Length: 104
Image (cartoon, rainbow, N blue to C red):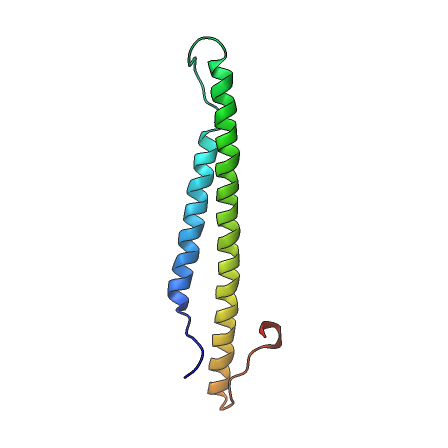
């Protein structure tokens, strides 16, 4: 048999894991929003806020990208599932499996 097989259950689990990681990373970014308290003399508070802001922006970007990746993997999962469903329907009807035109 040529081609490849896709484990839809495994792929769905990976989508869920990516979503959870994205949520966790975005929570970490939010935690860096407001460093509080007196951290020392001079402009230490301002320096810490600036550093935290820079880290927050970078971490937030990572979380956003992971979320986008999750969406793309979820889209692939939906496409694979549609192909599997079309094949099942075709076999059930006694026809050769076909790929829906929008998924070619």
